[in-house]
Amino acid sequence: MRASTSLGMDERGFRDITKPSIPSEVEGRTGSGGTHLLTFYVYILRCSDGLYYTGQTDDLERRVAEHKRGAYDGFTAARLPVELMWCETFATREEAREAEYRIKPWSRAKKEALFRSDWKALKEAAIPPGERQSRS
Image (cartoon, rainbow, N blue to C red; front, top):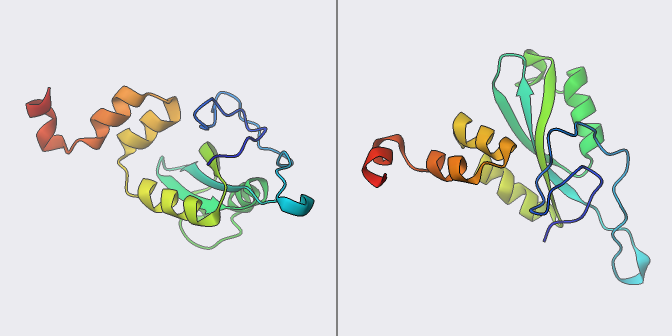
């Protein structure tokens, strides 16, 4: 189940990248007894060399800021600056982790179709290149 946030999400829970703001806080979801429930995010960053980085977090604003500062040695720190291209919310860390692992190996074309919410192109990009002509 996806949570509602102030990220400019569409009805499917995908971030509208034409609205580049990152939330300063998550709209409150509460559990039994009024306890605050975390929202978990899967996100994709575009690096300066055009490559994409996919990750997950429970604090999107903090994590994106850390990536932008180069706080983590490795992939994104070596490719600054980075830009948030897409994110989606999840109710549990497990759901977010599963989505991250599912999205990470996607092709560039498939990720870019996701950014545009172009479901036809995403479906086409999911077909192995050698099979695309035979399925048309």
